[in-house]
Length: 417
Image (cartoon, rainbow, N blue to C red; front, side):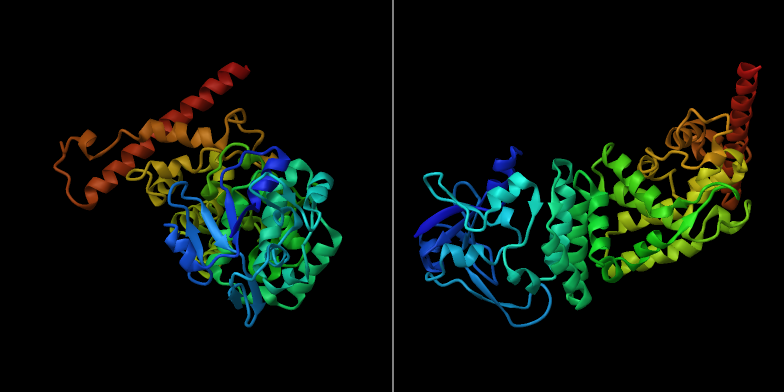
C-alpha cells in the first residue's frame, strides 16, 4: 500500500496559496484493508475513506470507463492493481494531476508544474471530453485563478467547444450545474466563469437567458452611445465581488440587468414599478436549475424593481412604501441588507440632489425614517380594526417619508444657493 498527496493541495502549494483541504490517493489497497485500519468509508460509486484521526479524505486509485451519458455515466475500477499513473491520467487539468509521495517528492507525469509556471489551464488527456461537467470546472478554475494570470490552453478550449457542439452538456443534472456555478460565484472574479462558458458556447445550453446579455445594447438617452448590457453586468459583478462574498448578492446584482434587454416601460406605469417580462426569465432559470429560494427571491426583486429603484428620486412616496411592503421589510429587515450595495447606474439620475448618496444608502435612510411606525405606535386611539389598521399604517408612513423627502430637497436648495 502506498499513499500519495494529490490534487489541489499540491497546486495551491506551488502557487503560494493557502491550503484548505488535503486529498490523498491510496495505491495497492482494498476497501477491506482500509476498514481494518479504522478508516470510515463514505463513497458508494468508488470507495472514499475518512482518516480516523485527521478526518481527511483517502480515495483508492481508480480508473473509469465511459458506459453512459453525463457526469455519472462511468463504470469504476478500484482494484489494487490500478497504478498511480492510470489514476492521474484521467484527471481534468494538468495542474490538478500531480502527486507527492511520503518523502515529499513531486510526481508530475503531465507537466503540471510547468503549466503552473506558464499560467495555463490544460487538459490532461482526451478522457477530459468524457465528462461534460469538466467544462464548468475549467470555467470555475479560470475564474478562481484569473487574478494570477491563468489562461485556458487553446487546445483545451477547442475540446470544450467540441463538447458543447455535441450537446454533451444537456446530460448534466441541474443540481450539478448550479453547484459548480455557485462555486464559480464564490471566486475572485465570478464574471470570468460566465465569460468562459460563453466562449465555448456552453451558455446556450446552461444559461440561455444570459445569452440575451451578449446580444443587447441600449442607450439611456436617444443620442447617447449604446452600452453593452453584458458589459454593465460584468462590471457590476466585478465591483460587488470586491465588497461581499455573498453568492445571493453577487448573482442577483448581475442578473438584475436582464431588465434592460426589453424596452423600458413608460414611467409611472405598473410595468415600470415592477417589470414582469424579465422576471419571467429569472423564474424560468431558477426553476430549471433548482436555485435556492432566497437567491431566486432576491434576484426577482432586484430585476423586477430595477427601473423603479434607478429612478426612485422622482417616484411618488406611496410607491416607495409599496416597494417596502412587497419585499416585506417590516417583518424581515434583513431583506433590505441585500440592497446595501446598489448604486445609481445610469447618467439620467446624476442630476438628482441625492447624487452623492448611493442607492443602497438612500433606501436605508428612507426605511430608518418610517421603521418605528407600527401598530403599537398608532396607539389605537381611533379604535381601528382590520383593514383600517393597515390603511392607517400606510398613511402615516407615506406622510412621514414625504415630509422627510421634502426637507431633503429644501436643504439641498439652500446649500446650492
